[in-house]
Amino acid sequence: MDGNLFAGIGSMGLEGISGLNLYGDTKDSEAAQEKVQTPEDIEREMLFEKSYECPCCFSTFKNHSLRTGKAKLASVDLDLHQKFDNIEPLKYDVVSCPHCGFSAVTRFFTPMTPTQRKTTLQMLRQGYIPQDEPEGIYDYEYAVSRYKLALACDVAKNAKASEKAYTCLRAGWMCRTYKEELQHAAKPEPAKVVQVKLLENEFLKNAYEGFIVALGKESFPMCGMDEGTVNYLIAALAFEQGHYEMSSKMISTILSSSGANPRMKERARDLKEEVLSAMKNCPNP
Image 1 (cartoon, helix red, strand yellow):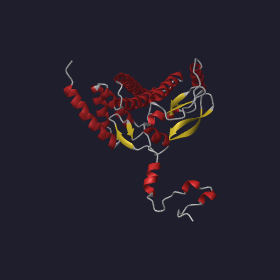
Image 2 (spheres, rainbow, N blue to C red; image 1 turned 90 degrees about the horizontal axis):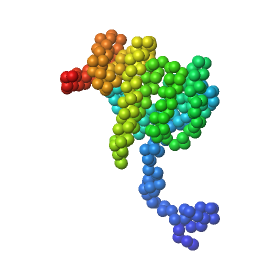
Image 3 (cartoon, one colour; image 1 turned 90 degrees about the vertical axis):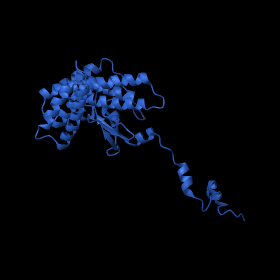
Image 4 (cartoon, one colour; image 1 turned 180 degrees about the vertical axis):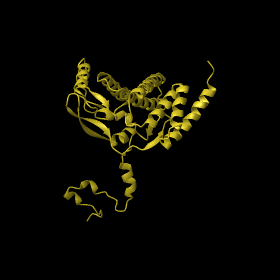
């Protein structure tokens, strides 16, 4: 008789295990079999297909969406842009109908008035080509195009200034992450970095201007934000664009407000130090 403990088990259809090591270390073999995850694999695992109904053409469709609680917060920028490990959630914050093209950031993908629907469809019917939802993760160029389409739809439906500013803000934040990834890429593309930086600046410039307009016309909460948060956001955007006097003015408004969130006041104090330092080092005109 064959001395192999597993000899003959092939008659049961298990020929492949005749060479098993009875007391072999299975941990090493299991580890060797595990697939090394790429950043794309990790990002893909955080996503699922969410169903929507288009408020413009009433078609049903699915878009990639981020699973709740999957992204881990890493840090927060001066202007409140949240950074996460392994993913930029803002790539998936625009919902886009693949049939008619209507697009909006998730917060504003809501029913429209008949007039808004009419003007939006008029714009889209000028040449929108139906798109298939990508099977894999969104790359940044594709995500940027979705934000641009969402902004065009904001204009077509005559959205509030705050809504257009909010779309620009999130697009600008996403471009910042795109730029930083390009800067740290194995093969840097300086020209592309400059291009994305310019787009980031343009989006954030328009976000700043839009929130200034909204501040004089709209009530709070604004895009889900209270007055103190919007004032701080304007102060931070103003600082980033070199409008130090405006930034200082908004900071004073926050610090003198009895209703402002204590954490927002603390952020305002930190920003005040940045503004004072910048003003001190700014050459006189």
